[in-house]
Image (cartoon, rainbow, N blue to C red; front, side):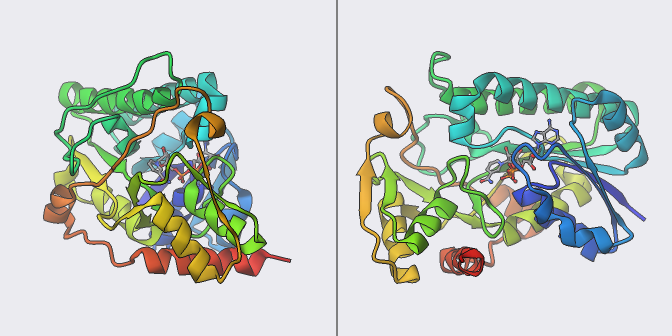
Length: 323
Ligand SMILES: NC(=O)c1ccc[n+]([C@@H]2O[C@H](COP(=O)([O-])OP(=O)(O)OC[C@H]3O[C@@H](n4cnc5c(N)ncnc54)[C@H](O)[C@@H]3O)[C@@H](O)[C@H]2O)c1
């Protein structure tokens, strides 16, 4: 039986991935320090005899080494995530993301295990390409803007993973995730859809940062999590980077309007300049659309859920939690 270690498995994406692997009859070990994840995300899995959870830190090297030794595959999802968290706690973000990946790759290499590293579309930086291809150039902002620290930490993770592949033939694949959303995602660290839905359900103003003309493509976690499982199970993926996401594009202002409409909310939409929402000189990307041809060619990947499905699922989840 295949044993999977999922670092960050009590998080949003990791908990959905855990369910998928358990449904396939595989074993899952979750290692999570609950810094942004929640135990409730995986509580229902505890009854499954193939499931094990350890509340601890990837930085606990002895434990991480032991868990990697016991596993066949490692999904490294543990990271400091979210623009707000990255701006407020840049030291933690940089060290956690870079050192955590270093530890995972080092022991995966020692015990010759297959690894998936979760990266992000942020690594494309400020490029203004129409559609981002994995081999495109990247344009990063200055080091004085902590916002770019997250993108850089993930780019270092990618370089390190590819170096292990080239030099030490470690079977490692990189998933460059674009905006992934769905049930269990928390809005606490600046994620837009859970925040808009919460504000709409409470009748509070919906806060659009910037002028709202920036566009994003949102993928359902129910499409993204199986793609992660598929990538690591496919021998042809090693040594490569894969965009994972959706190409359904919407401006943030239109997203806010859609949330108002779908919730039947009376909330007003309030546009807040970036300087007020974050800090002076905050930079954002205007557009972020993935080229999905590489993952489509390998796995036949195509998102099955659209933005309507995503909003319905998030609204249903938050609606059921409201008093
Ligand atoms: N959700 C997205 O839109 C998105 C987009 C791009 C990339 N990603 C990447 O996907 C991965 C999962 O993100 P998510 O959206 O599920 O966020 P999440 O915050 O829900 O998951 C991250 C998990 O890692 C845990 N964690 C963090 N540091 C840890 C450590 N040192 N030791 C043990 N556990 C630790 C957290 O408690 C959390 O459960 C991350 O690597 C993130 O960078 C996510």
